[in-house]
Amino acid sequence: MQELEIEALHDYFLQTSGICTDTRKIDAQSLFIALKGENFDGNLFVEQAIQAGAKYAISSDANFANNTNIFYVNDTLVALQNLANYHRKQFDIPVIAITGSNGKTTTKELFNVVLSKKYQTLATIGNLNNHIGVPLTLLRLNSTHEVAIIEMGANHQGEIELLSGIAEPTIGLITNIGKAHLEGFGGIEGVIKGKTELYQFLQAHEGLIVFNADNEILQEKAKHTKTLTYGFKANADCQGQIIHDEPFLSLNYTYQNSAKTKVDSNLIGLYNAENILGAICVAKYLHVDDALIAEAIAGYAPDNSRSQIIKKGSNTIILDAYNANPSSMKAALDNFSKMQAQNKMVILGDMFELGDSSAQEHEAIVKEALKGNYQECIFVGPKFSAFVQTVKSKSFIQVADCLSYLKENAISNSHILIKGSRGMKMEQLLALFS
Image (cartoon, rainbow, N blue to C red; front, side):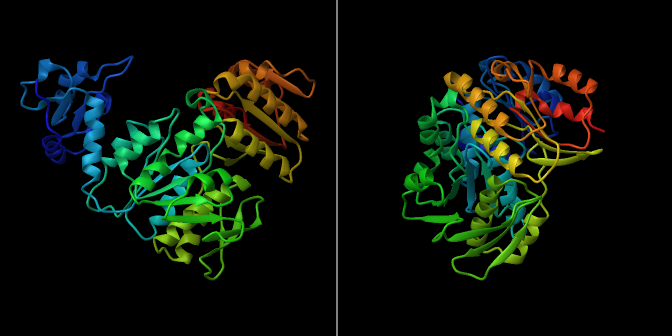
């Protein structure tokens, strides 16, 4: 059976209001794509999507092949990805790809607030950064957009290669290489290989690689004729200097020997300084004025449980519960240990997707936390609990158990770091604080 050609699919797409993949969220006049996974089959809901208001639907079920507004393709996911790539090719604009083990979402948000001071931007929404999310983001491109900022996540080798082939970025930045998704990547060497697939695409297509010159791994892998660097050491194209990092980061920067510019932020932790500098570097490359850059960064405040500072009664909470891995956990502890505050405590939740390294990495974080001068250390989850055996700390298998304990042992006048992997849902602990 002959499937719909990509050019014809794109023509149909342009007649719609956009893409939908969930019949519970059908937009009028949209194009429904019946994705199929291990635990769901969108083909079962094709007719429901049309009845709910979709103008067209794409299905891999041959029974729909003769419908006037339902079109057959061999694989709906491949069709979505090919459609996104074909659509992206219609736009001759800078397409910026951002990946990395830590900080990519914050960096993406910084890119967006800074570049939107001069350009109409399209940026990844939320965590739509995988093999489905990237195509959905690209299919939001329209004639008003002047720059696209695409976040790319990955938990195994080959994924960044796939996403780069779909998005065809012209500029790429890897925030860092850390101990994230070790299980899927097969260890740290696998992480390096997987993340630098972005560099390989840019090297093959004469794109611009933007990298942190202070990072030896990135510097080694970024060998290319078209590069732009940022960092806090000498000779970077965009060179930064920390003014202070408490309570929030403030820095000076110069770009290719330009005048020094001061930037204040609402971000905490030295680990965010390189994210700020990366955004500044690309903004300067794209001719955004210094005053607009400073204004944009000063006006940005993190949300969605990413290094948020939250005041609750007499307590100050650093909520960093969007995700966690050994690298980001250690960075958060390092930053928290340096904060000038009384009555500090940490509440840490298990880290996921670490494979054979899981026990070793959880034990190392327990030891790291217990070295800090904290009033109390609380660990949540079975992985951490296996290594908590001191009077200075407590452990709970479930967040609910931790909640029960804290309800009976109220915390006041304290600074509290709450961090864990997304699946732990550590943000539930906020309900305890008034």
